[in-house]
Amino acid sequence: MAAFTAGAQSPPKAPIARPPGASAAEERTAKYLASVRERPLELMGFLERMPKGGDLHNHLTGAVYAESYINYAVGDGDCIDRVTFKILPPPCDPARGLLPASQAISDFVFRNLVIDALSIRNFHPTAEDRDVRLHFFAAFGKFDFVTNKHWGEMLAEVTHRAGAQNEVYLETMLTPDQGEAVQLGKHVGWNDDFAAMRSQLLAGGMAKVVADGRKNLDDAEAKMRQVLGCDGAQPDVGCGVTLRYLNQVLRAFPKEQVFAQMVAGFEIASADPRVVGINLVQSQDEFNALNDFDLQMRMLDYLHGVYPKVHITLHAGELTPGEVKPEELYASHIRKSIEVGHAERIGHGLDVIYEQDPVGLVALMARKHILVEDCLYSHELVRDMKGSENVLPTYLRGGVPVSLATDDEAIVRSELTWYFRRAVEGYDVDYRTLKRMVRDSLEHAFLAGASLWAAPEDFRMVGACANEKLGDKPAGAPCREFLAGSEKARLQWKEENEFARFESKF
Image (cartoon, rainbow, N blue to C red; front, top):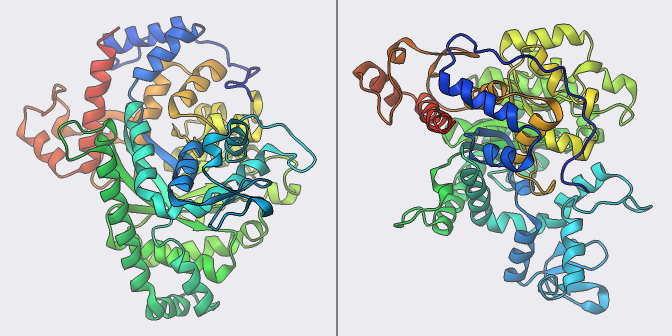
């Protein structure tokens, strides 16, 4: 599959004018990007150096490259099925098609077949593997066996890649308890009374689920810091990335297991500041994800009332024409995720034009400052959403805050910089819009504390810092005190300094 797809229709170019409040350096930088947008060498150099804020939509297992999973399997003495390319536990038996994982190191042809199976690299439809989207989702099951044993190495990989691309913040999705809540939900069973079922879960062992989840994160972070050398004399660039977690809920599971996962997510987010919110994952066209959608929103509505401080971001509208029945495409999943499920951010949002009253929905999202986590590059490769079908221009025109996010960068064989490149080359996104999306990624990050900005999408500093000159530390005591009390504002201040340094080069 080609690294970049052509054919996206660009909106008419507007003349570059210096907006109120823009610095001369920002204006020069905007003009430079406009001058190199059709010169790939200079464009990539520019985008690689550009500050990129935060990646708010990142699945940890989908962000680790197939080559790493092969290495884990080799180190653990695992096997790989030579037909399905699924990683399996020993003993290996070539006579039964279970090859030692080490063969994916020594056998170049086999190695490439494994990498292709664990990603969408070189995907070509066949009778048995006919759709890139299905191939994409099937990849998770092929490497799933090795993931839970290697969180530390996995976190080291994704934070290193983020830091190397000038990201300062990463929210990655994982299951802290590694499946314990699912088993608890099976044991407790379903109860139509949400409050009663929550009480049963709490009494039935939820405290252990939360404690084990926190320990899993402790162990993973210790290993990550060891791999990156964060406590040594030359720490890796990944050590400078602020890392937080979203507790993922597998929405295609039976309803009692989904509710148990939700309770576990809200509980651990209430107990551990590293877990900043929850998200529902898995393909939205799976039966339970569609059939139980309204029920799942009601679950979130109830739990939001119990845990009002826990943030919620939701995959929503992750459907395309022809994928499901029209009635399901028109079922207002995005609107319900916001109005019933209390989503503060929306992941993907692909079917927005098919929702009931799409114009009103976009206006609602703009008015309520509901950010869209736009996985642009993935949308093109996995969903074939190019040109007028791509939703990025729709949200930008509607005034909806947007941030670019990677989704599953390793399965798609990508990194965040490439998403920025597609925005520029495919959709004529200019520098100021890119900068606004970077700022919005931190503005809508689930970080503690007040924002540096006077209001959402109004990038004027709050009164305490309004007259400060950028620098590592503000000169005035009010601004220093304000930053000391807000992790979010400190990271935003840091990013503004990075922008000032970046723009000074043009």
